[in-house]
Amino acid sequence: MRYLKSYTFCRESRSRQTGRVKTVQLRRYTLVDGEYDAFVAWWTEWMPRVRSEAGFTIEFAYGIREANQFVWAVSAPGDAEAFVAREQEYLSSDARAAAFDGVPQRVAVYDIALVDDLVA
Image 1: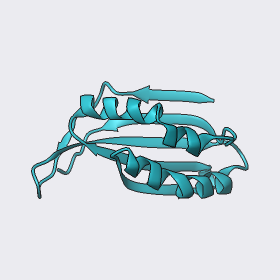
Image 2: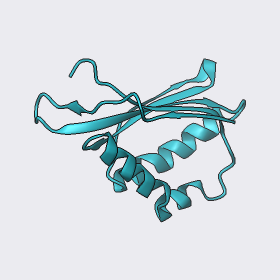
Image 3: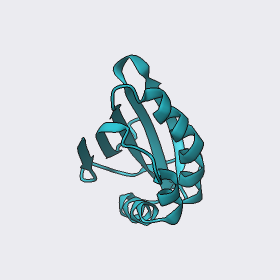
Image 4: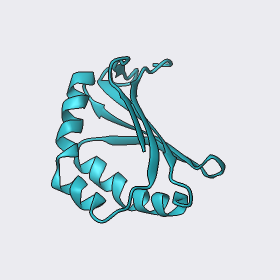
């Protein structure tokens, strides 16, 4: 399993409608061979609920079955520093622990970065 993570090349975006600042994290996974369907079933059962409860919004989620990939984005109000703090709290939460309890490793490569909104 490879884990790539970068928080250094990021800027928050400001909504044109509300003027509020939010930070978006793009998460690209290459899944373990043969685990696509199981991963998608697990993700759809758990992630929308536990991420929402932690104050995040799931912006989108797409699967690329032929490439064995899953791509999604999650956002939270505030700047990058606030996002990182919220993410650390989420990572140590009981809700996240419950979501991952007994789940085998289904992601071979993680590519995670905070991203710039180029059309805001």
